Image (tube, rainbow, N blue to C red; front, side, top):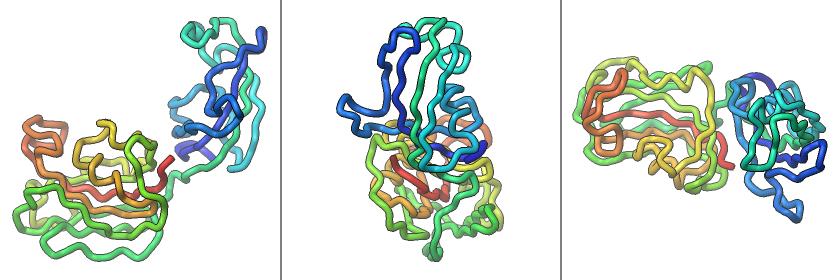
Length: 247
């Protein structure tokens, strides 16, 4: 596992000096609870966890002794009883990972002719917008049928996505993409909780892991009358989304 891969880990933690138990991803009976999901090498997790998993394979169990600067920093974490001088001991289990180049597998189906088409080749994605008016309602089509579990609201999902504006790319081959996360790599997000625009939340919840989705989002389920960088107000949006994992 390396930088920009997605790590899925469980861990327990205690302070070194007082052996005080800290919040973990296991309940009091040692059963797995909600795993921690983060992008390796991007400062999105505690330094101790980030450094522990980098370069290690899935299935590893790692003992980590973290001085303050690798754990909760100079301010500590008073809310869980960690002082600025506390060394913290972690036991970290790497339970899964998503490679930064991952895309879903399978044969891609064509979308109906009145919807945009897309191609994924060598890790890049293209979207072609027809010379037609967009649908007025949220529209989602499975381009690749996943066979994994159904995504539930509140889960952390790992998505790879690309987005384009319908109007400014209408009738053009090779739409200009405003959402570059497909090229940047997959990213974890808690789905169905308003972390994405309404249309994406609604379309991904209920999809199966391993699916590739073509999603057309009308303005009311997107950014509405608010202009965004590269997105005019009242825009219909097009997304191609790979649902890589749901934890």
